[in-house]
Image (cartoon, rainbow, N blue to C red; front, top):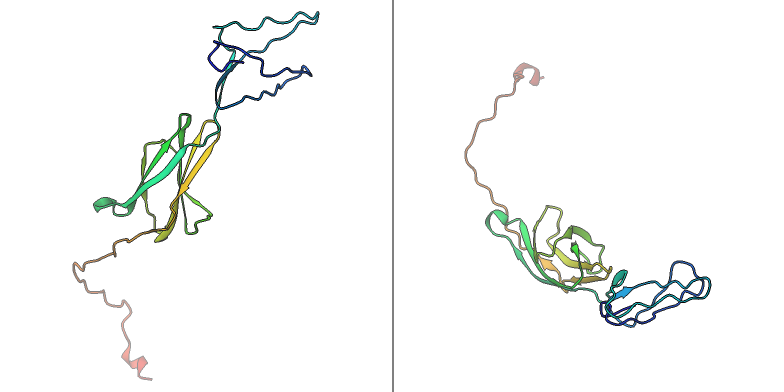
Length: 190
């Protein structure tokens, strides 16, 4: 294996049972390149790769989750008064293509309901607040990298929505049509 793109090579393991898979341990995170050397049945050893030769397989070892933080929430204005703008910051060298998930819950420990998942890391999302969304809830941001490391960040205290009170306006009055069955006064006197 190589840890410097083929400049230097070293042995990381020997497959003593000659069966796949081969388990390899590396000392640290980073990008590693590998070649497999097969010794002949007659005992002749395979020639190790020389400096400058490229690996057959390259693997990135990533043990650190992304850095993820919910930055702000802001209730929309005007036509977006029923929306909540969520902003976040996520950083990692190896993020998935669509690494972001957003969730909410009335309890800080969940269960979590999905707002949106599989989002690109744009740093913001406009969430339309449906009627079933409570006026008090916690938010949770999740970000995943290609190594499967997951970072989660949630609001330490609940978000309190101060939704505007609905208003209405009377625009006119219209009389109700008369009952189609006439009222029989003679029968009602009995």
